[in-house]
Length: 162
Image (tube, rainbow, N blue to C red; front, top):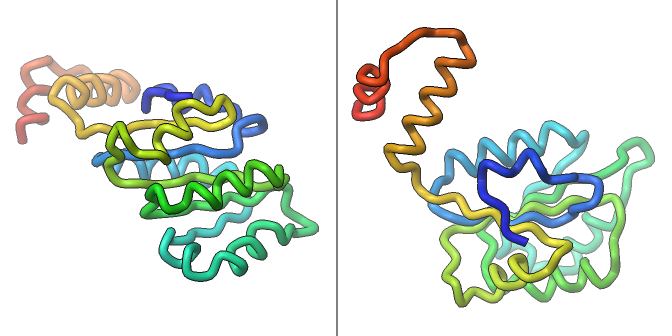
């Protein structure tokens, strides 16, 4: 299932266990990952290459639970099509108490990973495109409104251009 980056608030973390973040906007992606990370007591980061080199160790890490923590957040960076087999294995095994975020660079339309996340209802796919002036204008305008600061549109445009 595809969501827009501004729809992240709609994600129900109790029903959705896998999210794919992809695109060029690294700052926005890391900001949203940190927001999700705050909702979990424990998390672990992995690089795709390390997982592929030592798959058994990865499975041990995600299946061992803690007596004190409810759910564990797993963040997989640099995800590509090579990780699909492991993701489908985790889906088939229905491993409980884990939440997985895949962080990837740009994925082409033909990407198997992107297609898997776009078509499966249990999975969420969120693209993060570079900010345009229009998006930056709205973000800046919302920031000033939220902080109750009066500012003209000309000054907002000046800030964006700088």
